[in-house]
Length: 158
Image (cartoon, rainbow, N blue to C red):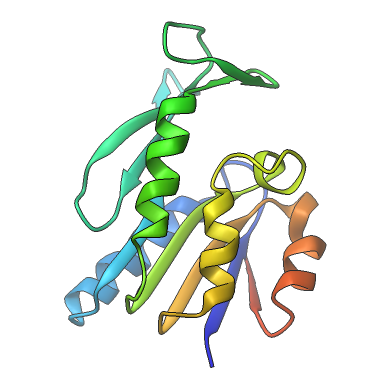
């Protein structure tokens, strides 16, 4: 039986930082880590970009920016997303299992409302081909995630 931890908390509460620290612990224990981490980039204390990092290879791609630029086509709120990076990330997710630790950072409006974003992550977590999954979920989508994975444990950050 798969073990799922839903990581939730307000924006900039430290959800991705929690995942990174857990990833480091898992790797030091010899665990095979896969999935996507979405670290933010800050300038003068302002979150200006979000990266997508493949946890198997370490490769990173610009996922979103608050500034429009070529290659950032999709807009959600103040963010401009790269369709190419979203496709790349979903391909990485499709190849992520089996593994010991699966990380999907994060699932939110793109996935739950528009069937975009890391949509491959929803099926991947449900497949259960891992020891433990850390799934970052925005608080406003927590109930939907708990319905998908009723046995999941929820960890509130912040």
